[in-house]
Image (cartoon, rainbow, N blue to C red; front, side, top):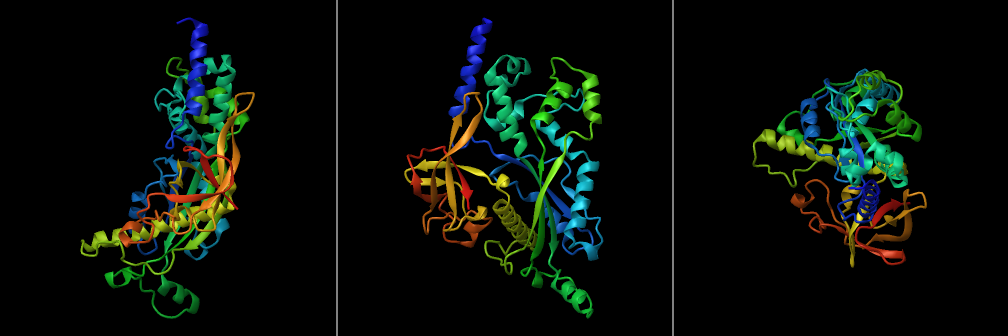
Length: 395
């Protein structure tokens, strides 16, 4: 195929992929979820087992590394000190080169040769992978813009959430507060129904600036067609470029007493205990994420409209939606330089009584709205909305 025709095909393919996204094809933020392990606390093995079985929230792409469990090095009596725990976390992130490893995962790095590719970036951004060929990007303005978009909308929105989950031992709290009695952990089946946890979630984001991207492409990038072991060694030894930014933390206690609603109490006792602990931990993590999103705008997720008449979206109680929640409706646009951006074209809010309860085991518990399948919304302002447009919560 002649070179100039190839260029045209690449440009058309990019533009088509940009504007032909379906409701399932939108650029999610990516999330790496970690648990702090408290070996000295009751139910530690059960909490770890439950955590490992809880999937990444479906509004995020899974960017987990193979290290998911981190030891709590802060002494027990100081574990409520967020600053000390934050230092513990950041020591772990630094010593284990988490930033560099997250970049390696983004570019599907081959451990043996060190070569990279753009398959995951293309997959998550719903781009045609061929447009990311670096030589083409040097030739085409659209190619350059696509790389910039991928950085801002994908890699730059990669988050780490470190969950410090501890069993809320009421007997231990009373003992520590009053200096009386013997600490008796509620480890019997008679007490498991009262299972509650305290969770502090620490939020971080992977740094991905124009400067870092330029250094990566210039100093480290090569694909399987041009293996460069000097660049491989340079990337392996770089412990300063790919850093992690701290946002903040949020502490909550799981809501009220745990109930057996939604759990098959006739199952094996070990299964019952696992399901209850998983339920409590899953809902606590979801609530913590909601509170972090309320505090940090950059962490808020976008969700597509799955229909326009009526206006509906796959979002609900799990994401903290209430009758008072408002969303801006966003339309994808492109500037003169080929960069994409979102423009607000209206505002919507949930319809009273039509909020989907998509929390873990909500159907089994028989909650109202658990079988809605989506939340119905009503327009407050704006023009015509269409299926596939994105909504984002606003204050």
